[in-house]
Length: 286
Image (spheres, rainbow, N blue to C red):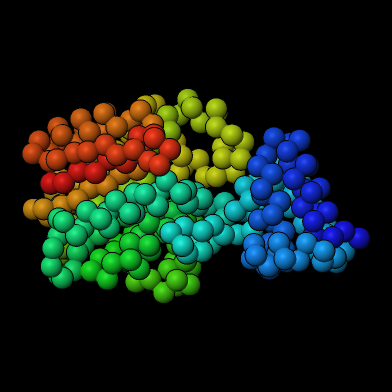
C-alpha cells in the first residue's frame, strides 16, 4: 500500500539514480490516476490501488530504461493542445512552438487582408505544426506531407480530435504538390526536417536515438540534405510573394541562409534564435 506522495518520492529517487528526469514520475502518475497537477497535489494522501501501483511502477521502470514518457502516456502538449504521439512520430518540442509563433507573427505584416493563404508543412509527423497553424489562423489552407503512412495516420487522428481542417498527402518532400498540376502556388512553406548529421545520431541520448524514428532525425552527412532538396524543389511552387520557415539545428543557420540566397538571390533571410539562445529557425521572404 502506497500513498501518492510515497509513490512520487520512490519514482523521483529511482529515476534520479537512472540518470533520467525525475519529474517524469509526476507525469506518469497523473496519467495513471487521470488527474491534472492541481488535483494530484491536493490528493497526496490518497492510497493507490494495487493495479494503479503496479502499472505506475512498470512505466517508471520503462522510462528509466529509456522509453520517452510521451510514448508511455501517449500524448504531448503543443501550443496549448494535446497531441497523440507514438513511436512512429517525433515528439513535438517546445522550440517548434516558436517556429509556429514566428509564422503567425510574420503573416500579419506580409499578407495583410483576408484572402486565403496556401500553406504546406513538409514532413508533418504528428501534425503538430500543420494543425496548430490551421487552428490559429482561419486564412490558412493547410496541406501536410509525410513520407511515412504510419505518421500520417497519427496526424490524421490529431486533426480529427482537434477539429482542424488539414489536407494530408503521402509522399517524399514536395513531390505530392509538384505532381498536382492544378494546384495554387504556395504562400507559406514550413518544414522541421531531419537535420542531425548522421555521425551525431550515436551521441544522442538513448531516449531519443533508440525510440524516436531515425527517419525524422538523420539529415545526411552534414545534416543539410533535406534543406538542399526542399530549396531546389520549392522554387517553381512558390507564389510571387512567399514565406519560407525552417526549423534548423544549432550551427546550421549560415549554411542554410547561403543555400536559400543562392536559390533566391532577392530573398530576405533571417536566422532566429530560440528561447535558449540557440540558432533554431530560418525565415526567408521571397
